[in-house]
Amino acid sequence: MTFGLKKIFGEHAHAFFVEPTHSPCFLLGLATELHDKVSVQDFHLDNRTAADGLAVGRASAFVGRTVGGMVSGCLTIADERLYSLLKAFADKEAIYLEPSAAAGAIGPVKLFQEAAGQAYMKDNQLIRRMGDSTHIVWATGGSMVPKDVMNGYYAEASDK
Image (tube, rainbow, N blue to C red; front, side, top):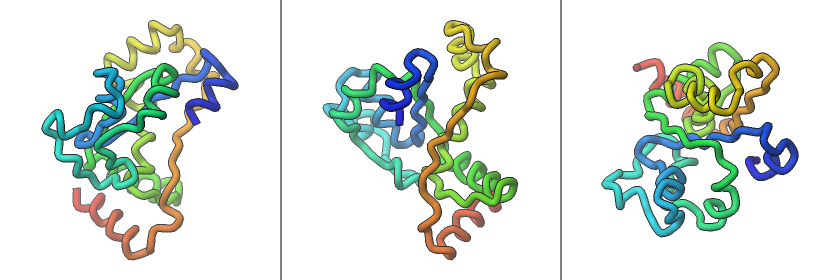
């Protein structure tokens, strides 16, 4: 998605990768410029997350080198927040996502709420363009999750 959007829209596309706090392999690969030569365990992270689709301890060399320079930033999200987003999608939109699919929804929120996000928008002169922007959350996953498992995800969110 990042590659395609950047090829089509160039500087007008701003892609942010969102990863679990216990498994930010892409962020670590980019930050260290070691891509697949570094793992989350090298930073004493346990790689345990409810976001099984994002539970990757070591980034792909191909992806890191191919799209790493196209990524505007990386964000992390705690599992508890994944569950609250999952519940919000279900309650407000009747969209049922697995935890990893809900991760991207935090991107626009963090852009507006955190100092680093606000600085990024200011540095790239994006604040005045937000009214004309489209935020895309690549939220695959959930339609094939068995109902009892989805109910468990929802219950986990409701317990928090």
